[in-house]
Image (cartoon, rainbow, N blue to C red):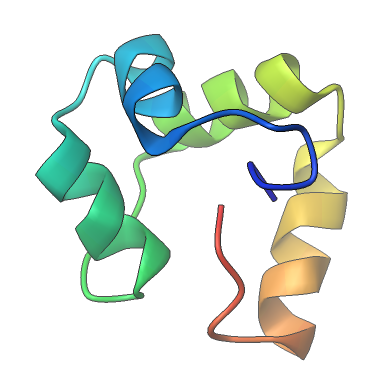
Length: 64
């Protein structure tokens, strides 16, 4: 999703207040995302949380 909005991994990690390596783990599905960070992603991209979750169900390897 961040690619669509032209936000780098570093920029999104800063917005979420997590490390770049942690974001990489989340993007690869190797680590879960917290509710707080899900809200931050929703606010950052202007997309409702339910749309983000539905997208994840359709494409499990979809990136944030």
